[in-house]
Length: 373
Image (cartoon, rainbow, N blue to C red; front, side, top):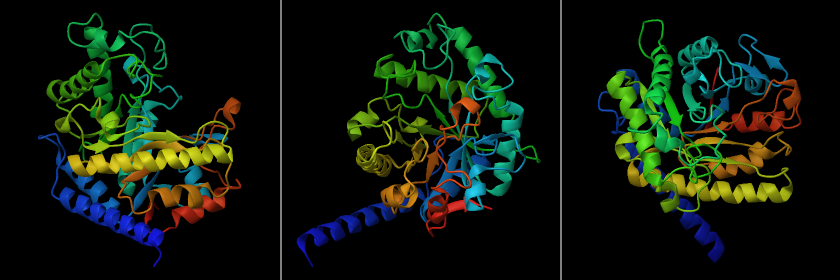
């Protein structure tokens, strides 16, 4: 055997052993919330046991709309293309804090609640992101010109009491997630994500590492202590990072995190060079997140990813699958397929008839890739 092949074999063996050890260590673990509901504990074990067999396929807003359609009962672009629903569905709760009837992508919260119930019945997993508005400027989450917003919502800050009202409204929605027996439906909350970037008001240039940690802790403590919310798993999800220390720079602590993730997209216009950059970034960040998960006994996953417009017809089998195969990741969540007429190229899952639809179908039928009927 050639030296290069030997190195590859040894590396593969080491990663495989590390993955097996990681899953073994986690099999007895529980959610970090000491008062977690039975359902939250079951969800935790379900996520962990599934990742021992492979990776779950996820899609943002999958049931609410898709490329060229909005609110068609039972429809999903992924189901149209592959014949099955995503195993993981992501939802955005931004604008819930403003007491609006619908989120920032015009999905009504009443509908979202029903979609979450449907997903639970299918045995699927729900993950929530929250692009909370800028409480200082009154603009959206992407208004990050100030570096005082986080400080202002912390205890003794000028907007602290108002922010608690926002948390109250968010908590009310979370507490409304119940099944037909009245049990809380457990979900994964991924708050204040991509914080290593600087495009949100909670980003790295908008607050100190300690302020970010305090914001995270305040939110979790308020949900648990004030509202008795114990059916959540919490996911820490920076954008791309350069090292393990960079990844953990704003980590709030083991007692506040159940899952660790990262967000990474194909950059630029999706040229072959851009795809190569994506491969490098994904490989690096998968290595970081799995190493951190193993050390801290957390569950690793991919918070968000994708290729806008899916311009490579072999993207899923030739780019994504080699990156995620046998890495012990719980799921990979592809971003949304916009329904808006002015966003016809804003989609991350190929719809039926798209040149990459067949490739997605091949990817979804891998023995270690999971969906739901």
